[in-house]
Image 1 (cartoon, rainbow, N blue to C red):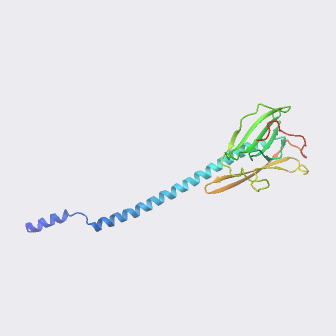
Image 2 (cartoon, rainbow, N blue to C red; image 1 turned 135 degrees about the horizontal axis):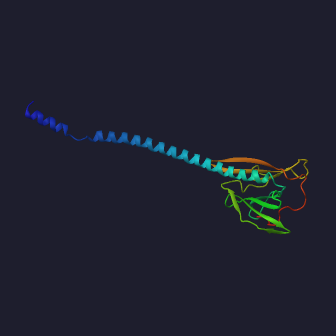
Length: 208
């Protein structure tokens, strides 16, 4: 090989990338970057949805555990209603501790929380009235009208029914991802009697 040929070989080995080759490489890189970004977005959305569903289930479960324990042993359940702020409410009277204790439950329309407060009746006075304690949040059926299938509290059966116990049906609608999940529970108050008494029950603290 002559000296000229060897020089041309060295120069060819040091040649840079052409513009066409650079554009092709960039195009391939952009394609893979787009695929990777799309996969990350899909995974993030799926994780957010799973987290939302889990949070919703936990809120409903916490509310259920408290209701199952306290409604089940109630001695009386009032007729559910709506307060001045349109919050749904219902009261429970419990005597299992040997002392009459009233608990008021409401679904707050502003905070979307299921809340409770309790007191000991003393004549017409609510002794030891507690502040509102959240039992769960994120419930979307606080503003429904009476008679709506998603009405939060329904006292069953009516005073004229021949059932043995009073019952409380609770409907909770919680945001779960992009949809709402509806949960319905019916609890018998095994310490109650039917028909219901016409005397006022747990009215000392007033309605919310």
